[in-house]
Amino acid sequence: MPFTLFPAIDVTEGRLGAYSSDGPVPIDAFGGDPIAAAAAFSMAGATWLHVVDMDLAFTGEVRNADVIATIVAGLPQVRVQASGGIATRDAAETMLDAGASRVVLGSAVLDDPGTTRELLGVTSGRAIVGIEVDGGRIRARGGSGVDLDLMSTLGWLALTPGLQGLLVTSVARVGGLGGPDVDTVRRVMRRGFPVLAAGGIASLEDLVALREAGAVGAVIGRAVSEGSLDLGAALRWASV
Image (cartoon, rainbow, N blue to C red; front, top):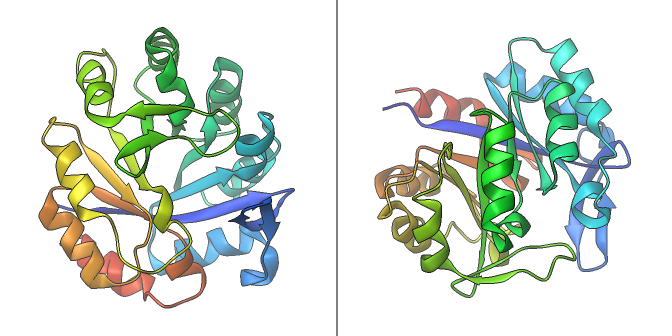
């Protein structure tokens, strides 16, 4: 079965960025230009991009939808999965209106099953749910303060109509190259969800381990932006 790779493009104030303890900070990869990064990833063969509005994650306001619109207009062969702690109908619809094919609802929505069901309904099959895992619990980044039991949350999610899948992010491994949290991916997989994995992916061997664990795809950040993982080779492997 093909395994879908999502090169990540993290954006702050219109430029490429990275998470820090003080919030998003700009980086110099691709000259700091998210459009150049998108073009490079598309040229390597990517058909999906994972675009994160980091300003939304930290302020609650969508500030980089124009980047998504520019990518979609300039690279019509590429689909965009938009993320950044999306927790409201307005934020989800803004991203979809900008041209995103799919949005990732932030872990903060899991504090309220009713909100989760509402957002899955209004996005009409164009949303997955982000599960940010830290210390075996769901702990959303940003300022939400969400701290939930993983397995009980997965229990009610399994009964939620319209759920297309989950993006499981190992919070402690984001921005590092120490390898993915395969054990957590396996735990989530046992609930029967289609799972994308993120956090710590550094090599083709990491991707092999995730596919063997049952994941259907992976979001790759630092490894492709800094070139430690050959994206073209990884995409060719994933297509087999």
